Image (cartoon, rainbow, N blue to C red; front, top):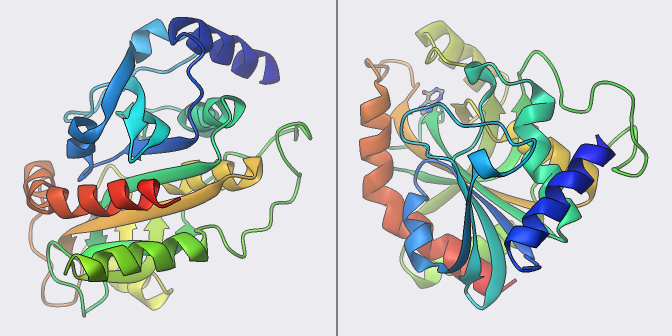
Length: 271
Ligand code: HPA
């Protein structure tokens, strides 16, 4: 894998005139608008990046954006890879390996999620303080490359507390209501049954989605700091479970996008 990472990293450096990003951003649902805040210096479609998979899901176009945000050099992934698209864990997390190789220290991610916590409303912004990996596998399975990280990874603080505190401060200063909670990651592409939402709440998850966990695991393995936000687009609360569509998820996420964007931009500025 090191060879592929090196090859891709070299190719990106060539195409971006040796641009050195310090913060990596995965623009999941709810953060698309952050692109408008970036002073863009280079754009690379995934199709032009060796070893990069190509995103297939509606609403996720695939390109890497390099530029300045909040005074920092950032690299943003517009379009992420999901397990339900048929990619394996190594493919999904390959861009995170490349981020590390490019010198990135902090990974910021967003996603849309269903909310099981009865205190949550649709549109709730939840800062992820931990996760439960319910994917049937793990991106670190297989021979460990000690150059990339340790065999057994400490996960006691996967989402950096300091960043959570900072995000909460920023939200408060801007009168944005945020909550904190545990994100359960599972494969999708089905949304959950009422029994599954009930089960997820009972095992300690506040929200559920189909991404983020693989990337956070690899970020942690690589020694990067991780920060994540979920936008609660639908509720998996007993008596509140209704039909969910991808369009509704997008629509709710869009209404909260300005708030998510502000928190993320300001967080990056204060890193
Ligand atoms: N479940 C899983 N993923 C999701 C959901 C959900 O309810 N809402 C948005 N993404």
